[in-house]
Amino acid sequence: MRLKASFAALLALLFGTGAAQADCTRTEYRDQSFTYCEARATDDVRLFLFANETQVYGNFRNIDEALARDGKKLAFAMNGSMYHPNRSPVGLYIESGEEMSRIVTSEGPGNFGLLPNGVFCIEDARFTLIESRRFDADRPDCRYAAQSGPMLVIDGEYHPRFIRESDSRLIRNGVGVSADGRRAFFVITNTPVNFYEFARFFREYLALPQALYIDGNVSRLHAPALRRSDWGTLLGPIVGKVVDARPPSN
Image (tube, rainbow, N blue to C red; front, top):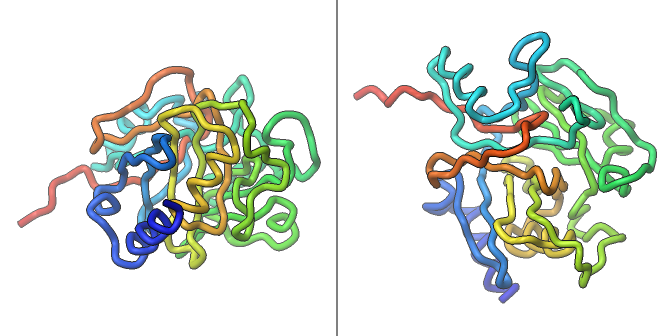
């Protein structure tokens, strides 16, 4: 099963698939259900937090309404990093080149502090996903960046503290980046999984060398092509792919 899934993922990465063309697809792997959305480095992928000086967007609808004023819309989106009760980001957060929250490199409580954690960075022509301390020592030029944790896959290996048979299973979401930095995959589980099972999907099914956990419990996906837009707790940072809302001219 592993070889078959990895081969299918490799074909998708090399030649593209109907699912990739549609941005998001739902799939089954090892009796668990996942939805993943693919973005290319040439796409308009952004992080969103503040709608104005005092208010955060909080949900996908508010972002779509703001984008509509410029003839744009979200092709897909999901919660983009962990956040405090006031919805401010935990750890490093960069939006439109402005650092709004500083990086945290010390070990701490909770999933975020389960080192190594990492930073997802959107550069001008590539995606980067780097362990936080390495990132802090040699920073790439990020237009957008969000820190979260733990890392799920690090240089093709699982996080060393994951327990294969852990009974801590939740709906979770995360992001993985291809080796050449040209593609990012945003994944949400449709069934509860533990950290090892979630990391396995990135490593085996998507064949990605780097993957980062974003969050659990509050995980939400906006995928209009799948007729899905999750509601619930107001969110902090949101990551999404922006496209032109106007139909192409003939």
